[in-house]
Image 1 (cartoon, rainbow, N blue to C red):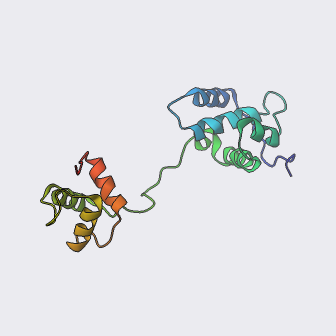
Image 2 (cartoon, rainbow, N blue to C red):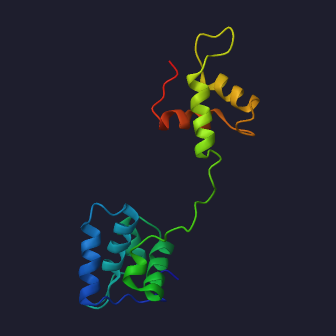
Image 3 (cartoon, rainbow, N blue to C red):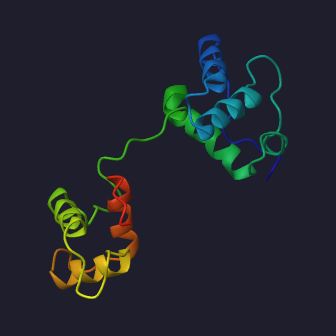
Amino acid sequence: MKGNKKYAVNLTIEERQYAQRVKRDVTKCETIRKRAEILLLADESRGKGLKQGDIAELVDTTFVTVSNIAKQFHLNGIKGTLSLKKRSEPPRPSIVTGEIEARIIATACGEPPEGYSRWTVRLLTEKIIELRIMPSGSRETVRRVLKKRNLSLT
């Protein structure tokens, strides 16, 4: 199976130039640059391309990845292969809305509970759940809200 190529990669001159530009573009993520390198190594338009197993070793990836990129090129072309899909919405909506964030910050800026000189993330989380600002939440969620706004509890 590792020797068989189901999808041959034959780049045009323009596609090859585009893939070379993407490969050198440091603003592109490593995944996209690696895809460009795989396409360039698999290109059979200027002679016999490398075997997919050899490409996988050179690029430090798996045979399946090389095979999938060749398939994606065959189905979507160069632009579709060398770009990431945009999600229409985040994988999971955030529990912390703007209103909840504002109430967390307001609570953190208020007086700490009786017997304490300052808020801790643990105390703040307990108070937020007690006040039903969030139905449930973790200390990490509260910590991220505070960090996002550069708010220190000390």
